[in-house]
Image 1 (cartoon, rainbow, N blue to C red):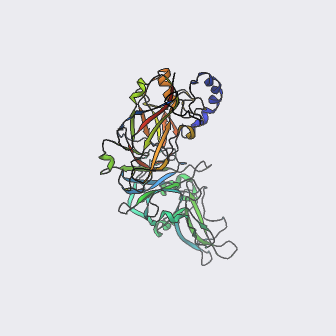
Image 2 (image 1 turned 120 degrees about the horizontal axis):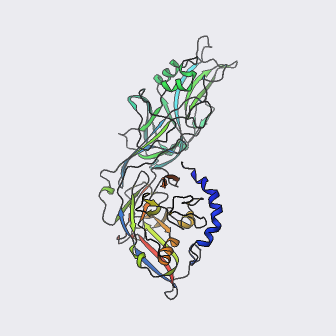
Image 3 (image 1 turned 90 degrees about the horizontal axis):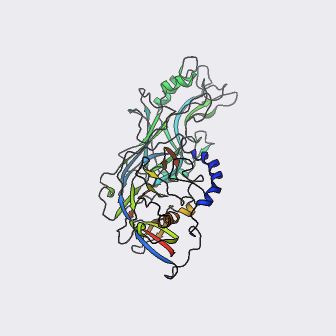
Length: 496
């Protein structure tokens, strides 16, 4: 079960909606736009302390599938979290076998072909979908060929982000320096007719072109005759940044987009004047007759020497997957008076700084810490109040069929001007009103909570999609005892 498993919930969710309307908490007006004014006669407001502690890191089990956007690049100067190294491994190949270049009747540099035809160059192209970090700083990208000894790089596996196939370090095929901000500009191809933008183009050396031509026989038993024979010679590519460069950001690359390909450029003739053209190998996905391509995305964090390693007692560090989290305890809820909860907002504020140009996570997420076998559970009621779900059981739907209603629940990145420093700061607000109502009225368990910036969610053995990109964002928050940026739970209520 992978990222699209939520479709399984739809039928159950529709049937269950009617029964849920009879059991949901109806003693509160939470979620409505109009909240009574606090007059300290009928309506009151209290702020409860939040005890926040930095979570302990553990090995990350995140897996990246062929259809997911992949991360490429490196961050070398993040004062909060240190360094990040992201590499892409891909198998590019033809979509049909026996394989030939161009059209079936083209003549290209073969014996008896017209003078002037022949092969010119090879370019590895990557479909660019965005960037995290300083897009004005050059990134030096390098392409290596995978080792001939690699036998475990397979198309039927979504590899964890710590996986690295075998690569021959001495076999550098090509390199280029790219300024991400310039990728919006159009680049003209060799024929001077076609142009592309939002594409990273890395020219490969003539020795790799020579390898292609030396193995281009499509007769029975030869490399270009079948998918299985092709894979014995062309294992794939490793794309990474030069570790010695002053890179400070990450590319986001779609492998299954048509703009990700290996272009083999040539001059051909087919009854017309000699024409410049190219054939493409691609990342094969959901094809017939040709097996899917193998892919992997390696993402490594090195936090040595960063602020995360030496935090102040009133600071909390949240980094996107593969990242960090914090544990939250709100002891005041155990003794909070029986009330109608109009609004309960969990507020988290950034400690603003000019020290980093790297942005905060697009979304934070809060769930419950469970001491049972599954470790964590979704929050009840508030993720999507218009959809029935029961997170206390592994039976579906234990998560909203329509996903999170961010307009209600919150967790999205918000911005304001810090009155203390005059700097723009990020903050996050979570509406957990129904959850708090259940604690104070129905005496439901007051769980410890976890705040994180996940790429996906893992509950009861299922992986659910979340709204953050992999490795995108990090933030330093004030904890519950921070004098200026205090993490807190603000409750607007009426006494019963």
